[in-house]
Image (cartoon, rainbow, N blue to C red; front, side, top):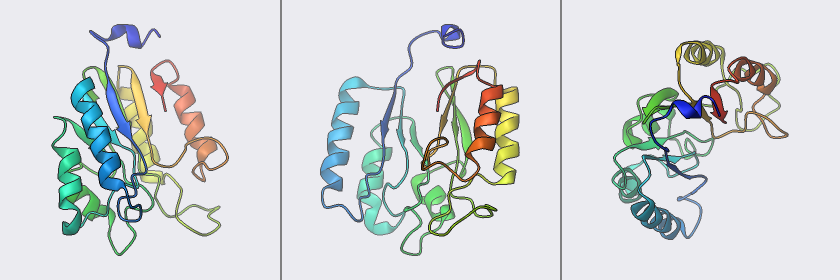
Length: 185
């Protein structure tokens, strides 16, 4: 709570996860309901937490619906966003992301977005990658060390629990060191 007391005003971030527009029959309706609610609540930013919509031209309407519904539309890459031959670079370019992992200031809250889709896990057992790679881990440590504000960390893959990234213990240790600043993961 001490970290949150430094804020000038309450901060709202609207979130939606796992739209799966390309495989679910009602993606347009669900995103429409989200956008409608965000037009009423008017959050400081909106965040889609992955498995959103393939970053192809046939999804430009749904991507634009999300991106144009707030002045700060933010994205996280999910494991299914790169299905059907799409890449992380496609997501970055088409969705308008600053990178596959990044930090953004939202009215005094520092949002750290991680990409839990890195390969290279020494304990990978098959299926989709679920790992935060070494380069990203070093970047995360630096962000947590230098950012001096309340921090929210977002990732499509859980960072703790039964379905967590392969290096969840390492990530939890890193986040624990910054526990006085990290208010939500």
